[in-house]
Length: 179
Image 1 (tube, helix red, strand yellow):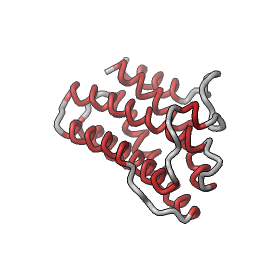
Image 2 (tube, one colour):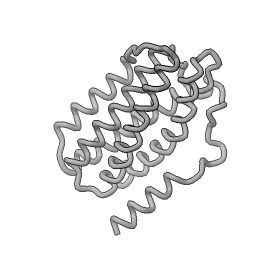
Image 3 (cartoon, helix red, strand yellow):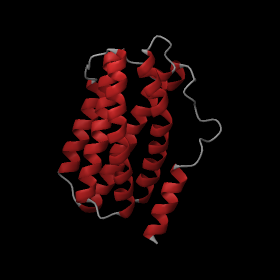
């Protein structure tokens, strides 16, 4: 039954975007955040990628929940590739890395908490952390992708990442409701 639930959860997250869901072309103001400057956006995106890979790897060692492990497996794979894409686009844009303290704080606090937990407490905290990070990612990728002043390669990266983050956010919300 858990295997069926994991398959349904994965399938639901790979569905086409629902009508009424904001698109990458939506104005930055509709995302509830201001787009970051280019270098800080790179720091934001790098922190999200690093968090997803690190928290996913941790979940693969700590969680016995098939749903959590499924999310973690997908996150590690996809965000490893996304990190490589970010590096290429950052180089094309000629932008340096500047950390974004807000998302770094969220990620660092979540990793500290996750490292201290086991069992179902870990699974619940993992799901909550994913919802929080993915909500921030959807908002920033949406705002940045609608920013006409943004660097072209980085804007394209944000436009590619927005639907992925939306999918991961929906997956994380379902995960939070199921662990």
